[in-house]
Image 1 (spheres, rainbow, N blue to C red):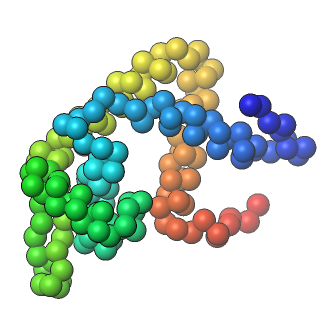
Image 2: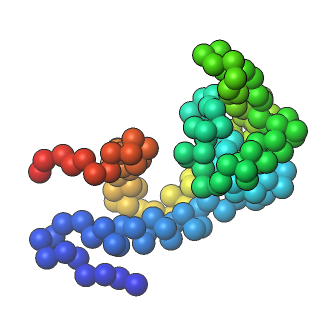
Length: 157
């Protein structure tokens, strides 16, 4: 469904959102890995990129309730994908981190995504590839803004 561009020639955020959702709908689907569901893979990815975390910190990034996340982390630990250790700053707390095998799964999935994206990009012409390359810094910046939780702050025009 195409939307009408804004009258000032600016960015059509509705169209951008639809394009991102549609792309993600195809791109994030990779073959199953060790029968891990999306939530399990998300936990592994978060631990890979954010380092050791407490369960409460992991709750803030995952779309699960604490009992479900606790159960999932126990399963991942039993499968040797996540390690638990005492938090040196608070002996009562536990830090969660990836094991070598958990890291291998994350790296393998990243490599699969790179290969899949390369196959898709191969269908683009030179102008489209340049436009995509030019968009990378903007997408990185949007990701940083989203991760910071500062979506309400704005840069003056």
